Image (tube, rainbow, N blue to C red; front, top):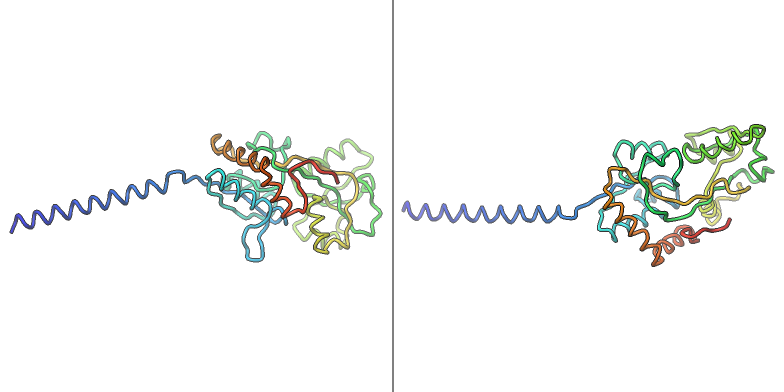
Length: 266
């Protein structure tokens, strides 16, 4: 009887041991190649925004989903409202990549690593249609609304170079169109692609885009320096492949009705 009990006990122990081995090997398999990047995205439609179902959508979302497929990296999106929140998120380590339209500027060039260039962007001024503004010079002594970052750098430099034509710079936490309508400021900078989208949707009638390009930039993704060089190489390879095979151009046409992966005229 004791022998039978001992034999059954040994069989049970062996069975449990085999089960444990299987569970451990399964856990190890799920961790292999389980690389993840958190990408910020915000309220810039069509670049990156939350759609009617409150899900991430837009050019940057499609682009990073494709980068994830090609690189084998799991991509997770984190929504932020406002440029300060975006930069705060990468500085605090909450996100790995900023999914915003930006270029390498003096203010950030030493703070982050950057992806390869994936698109071009042109920013001009927008005002109410009944205003007679035709250039930045016409805004001398007037208020314009800008977001912190590259735009403030540009206009601060512009004011320094044109002391007799200084433009007053303000910011707002309200609706920029409502505040423009109320006369809180006279104009604000906007990307050509966003204004063209407003025109397609019939929302641009009260406004006009005017003057020379305020900024013509090559867009890149700021990357937290904690992201490995190997991962950054995967990102850049995916971007270059997408540029070469036309995938990025197709994503651009879908959201902008134009190819922003190549230099374009106003």
